[in-house]
Image 1 (cartoon, rainbow, N blue to C red):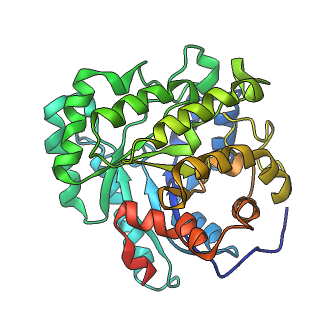
Image 2 (tube, rainbow, N blue to C red):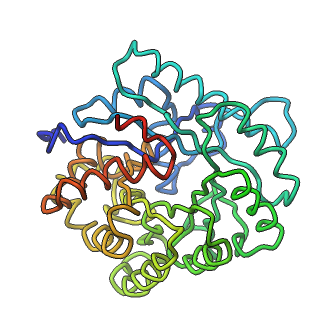
Length: 346
């Protein structure tokens, strides 16, 4: 679907996208029956060229933040340090963008990597190695998404239940604060209590909740978005009461949410997508406020539901009545402050 770009001059920092080459691994999933695998199979290769094409497709994307996804791990390294390879690779992409040869935007201006916090105190060496790799490294994500029904998430995800409450995980988690690093939390809507508990236990640790807390509308949750909404909304307000937590507004075009429940690139207009997402986005903004909320693309995963230009048009449909200061925060300012890339706004 092609649409005219809404508010084309509005500066955007996209605070959540991936880079990967999954082609060597696609053979492990010869029958992409799960919608998430089907979506990924549509974009098995997403590196500088693909990201640059999307971020220059009409909206004023001035910079981006890379989010770990287990790609380009260092061959031959031990399990703890293989994650350094991903940050090294993305730093090269960032340097390519920063050369200015491809325009003024700064792709991967901040890099969120991964370190296994279940190493406990042993994770500090990994974190310090990641920090020494590049000043663009700002923090980690250790995803905790889990559901008792394997059909909900599909084969790529294997976090244990209750990960964020685990004592050894928290032993490693405390080093993030000591080193001034951020934490991205990805869980599913039924797990939001785990993030609330973590945020209360570490009140000085900056945490951002990915994907509006991932409301579920597929697998055993199909058709239950409406009946589960009030519980999700209460959890969002409880989490927002923790001043150290910020929220990412997006991820709703993933297959997990079922908004839309078909894809990839369902071909729906931005106004239609905005109507689906409005209760979730508006609840998050109401709970957290614009200075603790940031719109995200989650690309190429959210390609399941919308092209990059239509995705951002849908967000802009939702903020037509917002003030200039509110838009400045939601689309760029909050991300710049949280990830320490305020220079992009100069």
